[in-house]
Image (cartoon, rainbow over all chains, first blue to last red; front, side, top):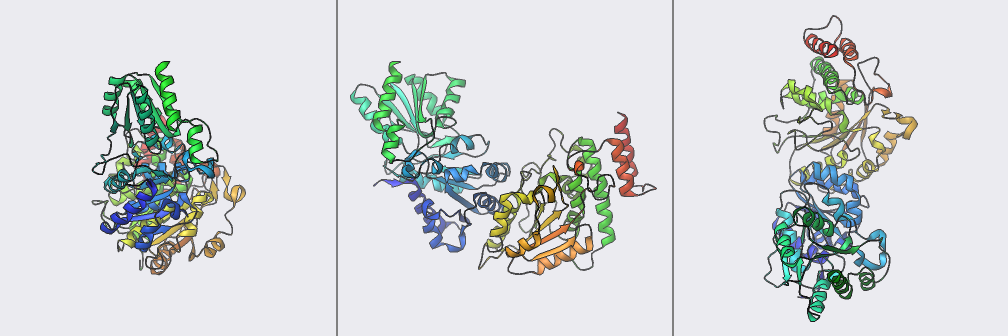
Length: 308
Length: 298
């Protein structure tokens, strides 16, 4: 399978699911070409709504559609979507309206557009709402199954998708299971929990670490909320060292969720790799290197962490 | 509806005003001004307009009501109790620990509430989404949404005012949506005109593509007639500008910004109820006065 952006896989999945399920509708705020719902809109024009650059209104409309039995996917860049947090908080979460929130263009990996378009705080915001699960798939096959799951999920849910292509990290027979993390590479020296954009780089880093005698277990945490406590504790208990890798602020993201779990249940040394500053313009590779999210950066941080 | 029994509706609204005062006095907090300005509109909707079944609050073919100005929910709680969603004696649990009668509407805790509101500006979008959803599903249900004038300063209101007249076109026009502005002229900090004027609101709405009707929001016959017209309007949602008086029915609350968000003390409540129900106090109001007088002596 070739590399594919999770937003592209999402767009393809929607067309397929939309043909089977008439309840599915899409809402966009003038970014349909970027969130990749245009294929769905072409096929089902009466079920696709571009409401203009009006994200709060879009989220409210989606809540109303959800409360009348439809399955609305409300899509925009993660920063613009979750930026309308107050509308998500009341009209979606508190009303328990089963809206499927889709935030694309996450992380510094969007590159040249710079900080204002980067979703870097969306996980932190949505984690604070009691009833919105957060799912961030790592490749095409996982994305398509996650989208199908979102349709069936009884309540609201958030899908976090990338602009950039993602190298496949799963076999063709992989089954996504909501709420379950999956071990991509077993190891006994350190547990590296990762999600979304940097998953491939984390595997690359683990390969380099292995060549240097450090055997890292790499776990893909597609469901960031609710966290797969059992899988994470099992791995951390065995390795005694945990590293998290994410293209999101280290405050409130996967790293924080893992810190909360370990801190309460099984205090374990932890190193969080992620974004600690505003983002900036640049090429995606260069930005990943700058934030320590490239294979070399991840490997170096793990070495330093283990040697401390 | 043809020939509404205005006298009967007015007496329901009068009892509503008394119950609003009662609820807020027990709660010790809340929003009397806007609840009193909107009660005649809600009475008309609940008792002469909307199709619903309190025994089946999620009945698919019901009409929907969204109180976008969620802080005035005491008026809606009264209508719901009167309609049979829950017993009347539950009204005084308003804002108390464990009560489904939350300070602002809670859809999950109280069946019959269609959307959580109270963070202003959101309910109109949700109502428009419901109207679209019903159209897409070929349901005949209508959606009624009451917005506040202060609330209409929110940007999200104008996002939906821009989109709703054309949303769903060409096959699913939202002519099943009726928005009513409770235009009482006062918000928390003072007079709407002085803080952020909406005028000329009717012209603005018309230029956005809304058919607009203007009524006196305390004239039940007028409100009902406008609702008839809204229902007869095809191809676009309707907007009713209802001119109201904040605190309507209680002389010392009328047009007084301080009564936007302050509960009456028991002795003030008793005075208010005497004004609303009239002297000598009718038999139905006497127990409420006795109850609140006792509350004052505690």
